[in-house]
Image (cartoon, rainbow, N blue to C red; front, side):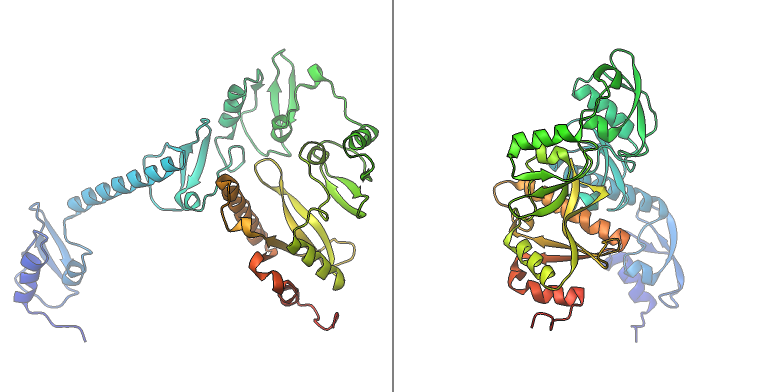
Length: 376
């Protein structure tokens, strides 16, 4: 049962104990939920219940309350701005409501970005060029200036990096269309540079000159950033990779480049007759420069048309900083992007940390609901 106060006790609390500078004007106290009249320290009168007054919910008039709220917000804005500055950003916002609100900032290269305080604490990096960034067109103009590219972007609206073509004008006055992805990768005016596309035979020659007979091109070349089927002749692994990655980024056979954990997962999946692909990616899940890849994709059917789940083996570099702290932060960012993507599209993602290496089979039997008697 709550304590019953007398009028004298209430008056003493308001005018002495609370140290609020307020005075009790009402001459009668009924209970803690009945409104009474108070005088604020500024002289203005206000009404509230004793319960609200006692719990610090209401100890000033409305005008003083607005002033205090404004001062509190100013303090919050100053603190939040400082947190962004510590991460190398320039704050462009002048109000702050909550941790999930997207705030306007600039990075060191003058790109305008939107990032919430929550995402900043998670070390998430905002996208410079994205449909989710309303400043993408402005950022592309900035990109042209920074890189001294004498082209003009004529489009006013940005729809998609990959599928929607933008209108450009080259330094010789030719107008052409090109997606932002292609332009960022170096594609330029087709009139000035021609529309010649590399043939499969030319690509095969480049592969032979680079690695000899170690790799065989099995697919048809359709572009530097379109996946093509390759075979590593040392282990007979067939896998898809973009020509740009194998020629310029040393992206080699995923089987021979496996970690011990990945190797153990692959052997286990084979022994349980699972349908899977290595290095699986989605066209709309990208890192800074390339598609993000999952270690394993498990399928329900032999034709691999129905995705069952994805598996990631997380080595120590997913959890510990070594020599390159920026690489660690990038890894965490990419891991979070994968987590968010799977959550958004309802895809089961099985993450196996390195300390579960000895328990990989048990983990997968449980998560994939496999029959543990198959290999017994």
